[in-house]
Amino acid sequence: MTVKPKIIMVGGPTAVGKTALAIELAQKFNGIIVNADAFQVYQGMDIGTAKPTAAEQRAAEHRLIDILPPTESFSVAQFMARAETEITAIRADGKLPILVGGTGFYLNALRLGLPLGQDGASPLRQKWQEFAAQSGQDALWDLLRQRDPDAAAKIPAANVRRVVRALEVIEQTGALFSKQKAPEPKYDALVIGLTTDRELLYERINARVDAMIDAGLVDEVRRVVQVAGSDAQALAAIGYKELLPYLQGAVALDEAVALIKRNSRRYAKRQLTYFKNQMHPHWFDLVTGRDNFADVTELVYTWLEP
Image (tube, rainbow, N blue to C red; front, side, top):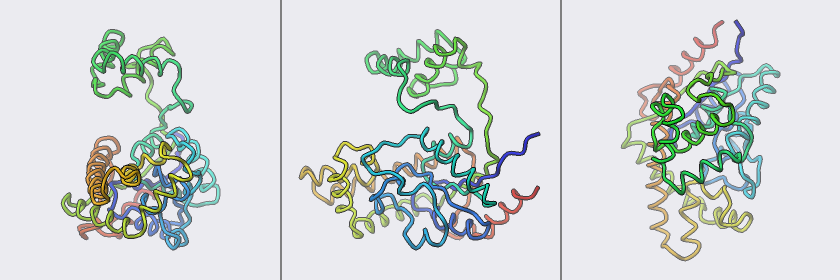
């Protein structure tokens, strides 16, 4: 039996202390942190992405932060390729890779070794995406039901991305999507999930947004727009896209800030749901003190034992 490389993954919603925990783990277990946040890869986007501060980055080495200008796009396939390179290098140095971020799909794709293929949509994918746009998600799903009833039974019509992927695979391989072999994970991943009471989480999110505004988020967004334009993928990040109408004079600042808070709370709820349903982590609440760092380290020690 092949022994898989060990990696730690720290995930969860915004404002629950992922960065602080990752730094403590890196210091305790001779680790290096690998960013798994879709927007912390961008240079000049520090405040709105809650990027680790200079002091935090000195406290523990971080990788995949500030690797791209905001003019460029970044995808899960690019993340996987870069993360795998970093993991190999970190382990070659005898250190423990610790992947940290709130972008659950990035972490899960890496954990499971999902076959994402090349960046950009294939002609087949574009065909089915256009079909869905023109005919609707129910018509798209009905085509999958006709071609692969077992796959359709497991994929809801509302999950258009997954339905498109299934139809694409069927055409590419000539085999049923439901009969495709599950990917073999490359890593032995210990998944640590951080959470806290919902009302407290929302209070922390609201306070964090206010702190970001006070720290100069509006000017940061203005600088990114000047560099990359208002249509840049980087500006799809929460905290940035909501301020664009304010910078264009369409809404008042307090209205934009309220929208950032609302969207951040909704995103946190989706993050929790994704991690719970897709990654099944070991949950800890370090915010209320219900759990503590010693509880996490005990789990890590047990996992590291041969």
